[in-house]
Amino acid sequence: MTDHEQAPSSSAKKYRTPDGVPADIVMFTLTKRERKTFTKTLPIRELKVMLIRRRSWPCAGMWALPGGFCRESESIYDAAKRELKEETGVDGGHLEYLGVYSAPGRDPRGWIISHAFYALVEEWMLEHRQAADDAEEVGLFTINEALEELELAFDHRDIIMDAYRKIQQQMLQTTIARQFLPEFFTLSELYQVIQTVVPEFKEPNFIRKITSTRSRQGILEEVRDDSGKPLSSNQYSQRPAQLYRFTDHVPLLSIYT
Amino acid sequence: MTDHEQAPSSSAKKYRTPDGVPADIVMFTLTKRERKTFTKTLPIRELKVMLIRRRSWPCAGMWALPGGFCRESESIYDAAKRELKEETGVDGGHLEYLGVYSAPGRDPRGWIISHAFYALVEEWMLEHRQAADDAEEVGLFTINEALEELELAFDHRDIIMDAYRKIQQQMLQTTIARQFLPEFFTLSELYQVIQTVVPEFKEPNFIRKITSTRSRQGILEEVRDDSGKPLSSNQYSQRPAQLYRFTDHVPLLSIYT
DNA sequence: ATAATAGTGTCTTTGAGACAATATGGC
DNA sequence: GCCATATTGTCTCAAAGACACTATTAT
Image 1 (cartoon, chains in turn green, red, blue, cyan):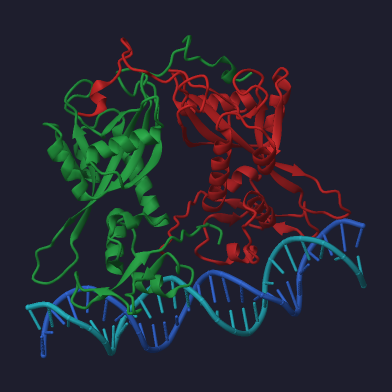
Image 2 (cartoon, each protein chain N blue to C red):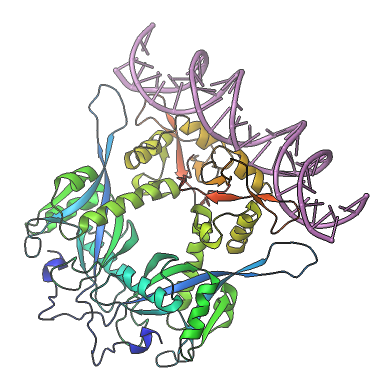
């Protein structure tokens, strides 16, 4: 007989049930800082994570992921979406489930099962947050700062490490890079974004590979104007560079082929 | 202020909290049936999922995933591991987290947040279950049977579909195929296992590709005996075939290279 | 003209893909 | 010898990788 048969009922609780089910969000953003050089160049980009300094028990004074408790009338994903909106004031943005954190004793308030999400937001979305919220300390940190220098609440260090691993994997295996780029972008920008999130990624012939191989064809396409002329941009370089955009194509990867 | 600040405490509950947090397991197995032909040949393999017919409210009479409620003293993963052991009598086997199912109203018993796992077990592990459990109806079904012909309890249809998608993806992108194979195996067996789980997978030159390309090197290695002579098997063919085993290498895939 | 980045030409080597040819062992 | 499956030979074309070269624009 499975335990399903001995289910606790909502009317008469006989079994110990969790004390709360929050959704916590690892909000990543890619900051963009102009380099002040005499000539045009790509901005400096850095991957950052948003944290909030807790003011009250438990873990007062430590840095924590933004989050909030889920209500009965919503799914966990809806709770995360609501929380993301409260923090950024924005509805959009990439929001994806990361996992569940349920080790006994992870939260001194009781039996708290946390669901982690990660979001990719634009830097400006976080400015709203800083102004709107009264006196709550908010910070943007690089992954290294967060993991090495800060005191993190609960098991949020584990969550951030897991989220970092996941975003790195997704950056290489999906087209989430689009979340960090304008609709049209140059291949140098794309390469820089990938490298910012996955420093190990090195492709000397990146441009050629993307543009000249059949198997990669389909994930990107050249941008052209109405008359079919290729569009280019010289925002970051002297010589204009061809603009590209992501298509809807999602390639299927395999270790065997 | 984040909702973390308004946390319910275990001593004095002021907020509605979930009525239960079960772990449900999609148990996959690959059945192996000898083909009765005059000559040696590979067995027929089929991917099956184990379901249990519910006897009591809610969803009495419908087929459901095996599962059980999580206790305060264990993590969700531990609960799934415990449940897997109860069902199969075996400690081992591949067990992996799939996701959370929390849509309001998904369970008539109340606010029940289910965590799905999927497991890969060997067929014989399920035999124990059939004998040990008193009078509970257990079945092994192909994915198609489960999705097309059975009445499934709760949102277990969604869970099974998600699990199927995930196992297909993992079969191509990780080395979980090893869970369905003996330690040493021939490349024909490996190919058959992959195709059983992912029928779309077609590689005419499979053997050559695996054995002769540098980029795939490392995930498999030839088995040799003490004196360095290659080991082969003629269990499934007249001419003996080279045996291989998986290494510990995990390749990193990217859509950009 | 110069500097700086975008993109191409070209050559070598590896890998994919298709088939034909050969090898092995049970019968 | 015959059969069925495993494995290799061979040939063609696509792609990776390296590096030198050309192109385009701001200053």
